[in-house]
Image (cartoon, rainbow, N blue to C red; front, side, top):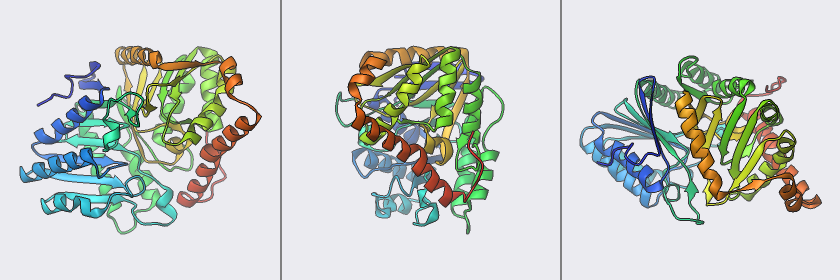
Amino acid sequence: MIKPDENAIIHIDVAGHSLSVIIEGAARFASLLSYITEAKESLRLFYYIFADDSHGLMVREALIDACNRGVSVTILIDGFGSSPISDAFFEPLIDAGGRFDRFLPRYGRRYLLRNHQKLLVADGRHAVIGGANIAADYFSDMEAGGQWHDLSLAITGPCVGRLAAWFDALIHWMTSEKPGIRSLQKLITQHSDTSGPIRWVIGGPFRRLSPFAKALRNDLDAAHVVDMIQAYFVPNWTFLRRLGRAAKRGTVRIITAAFSDNSTTIGAARHCYALLLRRNAKIFEYQGSKLHMKVIIADDVVYLGSANYDTRSLYINVELMLRIASQDFADAMRDFCAGELVKSHVVDTKWLQRTSGPLRKIRWFVAYFLFSTLDYTVSRSFNIGADQSRPS
């Protein structure tokens, strides 16, 4: 068995929890499979994307083997993110005794609501979270290819039991006769922690701020040193200015993507750079491959999980983030962020002026409006209804 922490770049204990950060794609996949193959009692999985490819097949077969060992297996996927994969792919797992379902699989008003979580819980004691979906290109280590540069966090400790309870409550909501938005909001609030050094903070479609967005707002408003690695960086104006104020108070360093699956998101992010540079923030674009990490460090608090620093993750999607208050862990993650600068180029005012032009600036603005305002407004009106309050 390949233990989850053998290839970790960071391994640390925080408040009775063992935390391992794994970067290398093959090691992340080996860690994921090891939890499945060693499970004795139960496996709970939720993934935004589950692909019918080599890695998807390996995970499915490992889950079938677990069922044959008598392990209770439940896998949930998002109805939008995993729309290409057919239910037939999971029939062998169901035949073996596993359980499978989709989050909001039917079209309609709520189809714009996406469950963006990525999590595995083994035996209610071990968990893996992060940005990686179940697809081959999330676990490849090739340079300058179509793969995603990502990380996984392996967790063992008391908080994993609370994550299992959240999963069970979510599937109960999904399979109820009327899975309404208000009852989902109630679940998210009930299963988000409000105290302690290790907290689950869950995002979702709220009229104002979800537990995740509220916790992040409070931490950023108090922070003097902020580091981020963000695959998709399209915050609304309020959260963008929040970073600008932090930069004026102290230091803000942001690594964003130079390559992505959607070039429009790159333009939307670049529309944000000028304001942040005027506030003395330091900005970098990752060059090694497609960036998919979601890392936020505010003073001695670290957020890791599924959420991007964009309007959809902050206000609409169901997102899972672990908030870890630990100076040692924050220092270790900042060292990791500093190492990522080797494959990143500096974004300064001169570079931005050379790269932009009148037409390109217009395209960047349109891209930013599309992701930060239009998508938010349409999805919010469909899923929450008309609301006169402004997000803060």
